[in-house]
Structure formats: structure tokens, C-alpha cells
Amino acid sequence: MSNDQLKQPALTVKNISKSFGGIQALKNVSFNINKGEVVALLGDNGAGKSTLVRCVSGIHPPDSGEILVNGTSARIDSPQDARDLGIETVFQDLAVIPEFDITANLFLNREVLSKNPLLRLFGWLDDKSMQATASRSLQRLNSRIPNLGEAINKLSGGQRQAVAIARAVNSGADVVIMDEPTAALGVEQSAQVNDLIKLISSQGVAVLLISHNMQHVMETCDRAVVLLRGESIADVRINEVSPRDLVGFITGAQRLSA
Amino acid sequence: MLTSLKSSNWLSTSTLIRREYFVYYVFFLVLLFFTITLQESSFFSLTNFMNIIRQTTPITIMAIGLTFALAGGHIDLSIGSVVALSALVAAVLMQLVPMPVAVLGALTVGVVIGLINGLLIEWLKVSSLLITLGTMGVITGLSRQITNLESVPIIDSSFNFLFGSGSFGPVSILLAWTIVASLLGYVLLRKLRYGRHLLAVGGNESGARAMGINTVKIRIASLVIASTSAAIAGLLYAGRLHGARYTLGEADLLTVIAAVAIGGTSLFGGRASIMGAVIGSWLMGLINNGLILSGFSTNEQMIARGLILIVAVAIGVKEQQK
Image (cartoon, rainbow over all chains, first blue to last red; front, top):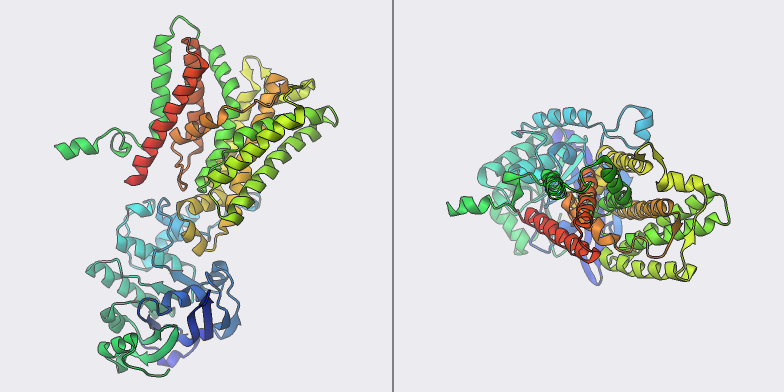
């Protein structure tokens, strides 16, 4: 999956810091993801992975530092800002609405409105058009989802994950962040999600993947950024390290400046 | 065998009766019951049904409004008190200014109270149950204060006609209010983006926020809808009774919550039904009417309403646990 020839940065994070109360969760973290690249964000619990994801996805804007999207500096003060800039996040809890069907979840806060200008003014939904687009976008991801009218809470974990990923990709995002997408999944479903990640990266999407599963990281990622107590302590190419090295970085036994 | 018996427990409605149709079955059964037991009286007649509509329309409108607050995960206990204040404001203003201005004034009462409720809940991050319990007290006190516990008559005949007393032949104008409110409520909840976002916020608040939905604005609006519906209900009482009194809407809160709950709207957000609220309110009206015709007292009616609420909530909670 390596795309050395395409070294165009999709997302660049420069010297990001964030503290909550007196606790500094992130200290001057910097890294870069190129288009079509899959980068693992690793670190022990409390290392700052989730905080970093929340900074980039607009849930907690950083205290200082800069975020560049496609090479230009961007202000991300809210989740809507992030989505508008083409950064989509697949949260650990998936941020799906359990009572909604697949289509309504895919288009959450991206609803297609009626073409009639008067109805449009009131925010009249065009459910037919959303259903058609939904079925096309799920097909593109090769996901085996039986019925678009099915409520999310009737689906299996893997299917929900596929819907959340499809929602991220559906909108034409340039950057997709995934927070432990396989944590709750079985072996076969995890493999499906990994295939999905490879598929979207081959379509040019930059992927930031948080995972605790070293095997998945070795299989799917091009590079790994490792956080330790809020600081970035390693930025390495996956094919140049062993899983043992990565674990060493995560626990702090090994150090390598980025 | 035992497990299959357990799973077909009538409370776990999905196997036998789908939750959203439950209120229709109950409505039909109650209708059948009173039709048979009250054969001698005029229960099953157009006149009596129109009577029920006339008495129930304010409840129906409040139930539709409360459905929005509940859909987003809030509750509004102040709606009953808004009824009285809105009616009194309309009646007092009508002695001073033209009727449409007085109506606008009463509606403004609803909008402003909804805004206050919403802003307090969202800013203080306190449960809507407590905030609206507080505003209920304040508003009830205000209603008693401004008129010194006296009723205020309304002599404007066009107001009285439009807001409850009017009829076309045997058909009360209140039926038109019910139909229009139901349609508006249905469209807003099911067809417009606002309703979709409101249900999303009620179904998974942090998820909706992560997807960029402005949960605060959406929920404040839901409380404004609930409160304004109560203000409209107040006008409809005032128009039917040709006057306003601080006791209006006093006993309605329980009826409205029971109607909405039995109609299939979750009291915890995320699932809501406008038609359920309408049929639920008619069911409450039907039971009330049937009990009166059977010779039961208001005390017994209140007991019946309380029991219905408990049953409705029990079913709802069972559903939630699945």
C-alpha cells in the first residue's frame, strides 16, 4: 500500500498541545499523513491517542499548535469544521444512532434535501435520493449489508462498523480517522474492516488508525506514530520495524526521535 | 417451553403486538368495552364523539408538543402551568388591544417560557425534570398573582369561535385544530431535517454532537415547541370556555404524559410518534368520557389516568431493556 511516489500531505499536525485542568495530555505532537497512506497511532492507555483524535476531529480544539489539511492551515473548532474540511472520524462508539436505519445514519447531518426550492427552505428530506446513494456507496465498499431500511441496533458489530466507515468515506473525505475499529470485532469481521481500510487507502484516502492489535498494524499500516505520556516518541516505517520494536516504543523501553 | 412462554410475555410486545400499534389496539378495545357497557347511554354517537374531541383537543395539542421535547431526551413539566398563563394573558390583553395582538401575546408567553426552560437546562446542564418543575411553580404563582385568583371573561366572539366554540354543523372547529396540529407535527418530526436531528440527539447525544449536530440549539427548539403548544392549548381552553382562569390546565400534565407514553414515544428520547400521541390523547379522552358516563367520579378518573401512565411506562421500559 505504500505510496512513496504520491508524497502529498493530506493531514499535517504541528506542535499540538492540549491540557485538561493541570494535566498536559499532549505535548508538542507533530506528524504527517500523505494521501493514500495508512498511519497507525499507537500508545498505551492514557498516552494521548484519543485526545489527539479529538483535537483533529474538532471535539476538543487544541490549546496550541497548527493543523494543516492538504497543505493549508485550518481552523478546527467544532466537529462540523472538521467534516467540512474533509476529515471524517469513525469513533470507538461509532457515533451511530441506534434507532435510525442505515440510510439515515449514513447521511446523519449530511442529509439530502428536496429539489423543490420551497420545501428545501424548510429542510424537507429527500429520503429516496438518500437511499439510492446509500446503496451505491455500500456496494463500492463491498460490504454485505442486507437491507438499508434495517435499524442499526439490529446489525452485527462488523456491519455497524462498515456503516460507520461507509459514512466517513461516503462524503468524499480526504482523511479518515478510526479509533480502534476492530476492538469489538471477531476475527472474520476484523479482516473485513482491514480490507475496507486497504480499499479506501487505495482510493487515495489518508487513514489514521488507532489500534492495540500489533498484527493488524503490521498488516494494514505503512507507518506508525507512537505516543508516550502525551509526547510523540517514534515515527517509523512499518516495514523497518518488528512488532517487538513497536511494543518497546509503546511501553517506553525503546526510544527513537521522530 | 418455559423460555418460549417467557418471551411471549405480553409486555415484550415485539412478538405479539408491535409497540407502535399498541395504542391502536388499546384504543379499539376501550372503545368496544364502553360501547357494550354503555349501550343505554349515548356513548356510541357522533354527538358524544364530537364532545370527546372538544374536550380532548387541548390535550392532543400539548401531547404533540411534548412529543418533541421527549424525542430530544427532555421532559417539560411546565406545560400545564403555561396553559393557564397563556389563557390569562390572552384574556387580559383582549380588554386592551385588538384580538390578534392578544393572541400573539399569549403565543409569545409560550415561546419565551420554552426559551427560558431550554436555556436553563442547556446552560446549567441540569435535568429538564428539575428545571421545568421549578418553572412550573413560578408560572403557576404568576398566573394566580396577575388576576388575584379571579377569572377573566372573553367577549370577543370571533376569538371564541376560532379558538374552540365554533362549529360547522355538528363538526367542531377543534377537530380542524387537531388535524392541522397532527399534520404539522408529523411533517416536522418525520419529513424535515429538524425532526431527524432531534431524534438523533435523543437517540445518541454524543454521537449526534460528534457528527456536527448542534445539540443545544436543537433541544432548546424542542422545548419551545412544547411550551408554545401548551400556549395554543391555553387559547383553545379560553375560546371554548369564553374566559380564562388560573386553574386551566392544572390537571393536564398527567393526562398529557400518559397519552404520549402510551402512544409509543420513549420517555428517554430517540423514539417518538406523533400519531401515537394523538391516538393516545383520544384514548385518554375516551376513558374519561366513558368513566363519566358510567358514573365514576373525578377522583376515580384521576386514578385511572395514573394507572395508565404506569402501564405505559412499564411497557416502554421493557422495550428499552431489550
